[in-house]
Length: 119
Image 1: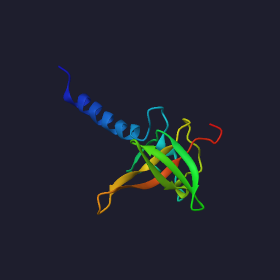
Image 2 (image 1 turned 60 degrees about the vertical axis):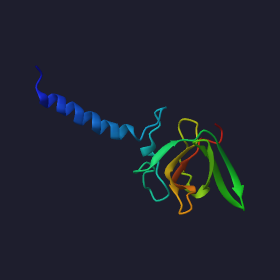
Image 3 (image 1 turned 90 degrees about the vertical axis):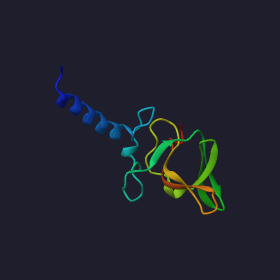
Image 4 (image 1 turned 135 degrees about the horizontal axis):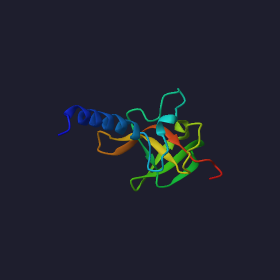
């Protein structure tokens, strides 16, 4: 019979590595490597994931990125776009969806990561 200590150590190691993998998407892109305008990691206790589609456009004279998240288009100010391009060729967003007092779900962005314009 194996001693319990190595098993416990493996469980702790697995849980610790799961936290690291939470910042990496299905194509191996590490969200933790991206920083916002203040130098804060984009994947800091917020959900980061790829958008199904995106459009980089203008609205009322301001830059806006429209992202398709969970079958719904959301508009995010271009202010949240980070300087570094997405390494997997897709658009991504880091943030949360919150409900207003009226029950409407609105995006609360932290970062938007776009692919290279040539992608």
